[in-house]
Length: 194
Image (cartoon, rainbow, N blue to C red; front, side):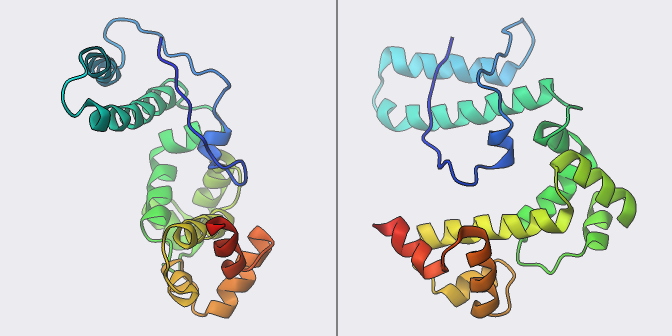
């Protein structure tokens, strides 16, 4: 049995994390999830033997373990509603990858549908049913999430953050950011730093 904990911000959790069950059970049946099994063995070896550099390697293996566990869980729950279904669906996954890969692009539903290999209407219905919100609503939320991360982790000016997430002006960005976070980008950055 492997147990672990991550400290996450409660405000605006990623929908995938929000959809996780309280306990994730992945049966250890032979032949299932060989990558996960190998990673657990490698982590066990590091923790048991404490070779030189284990203090550096072990946290990275724990992070990789989380990703492998989520992949295995997604594989087990493919076809379910919510994010597990959205990521298992090739068309929706392609659209999400496009949004995540270039949040600054002035995406339209038609362009995202083309990236997904579907017509505009079919894509919009499929995306909304799997993700739980329309494509452009998700795009805006992803932009604001990305902007919040940039504000927390860099000292880039607000105008540069605005451009990085697809806003042509700092004013328009600040207005959208305030709508999402109930504070200005500068206020958010100041609160995060204190």
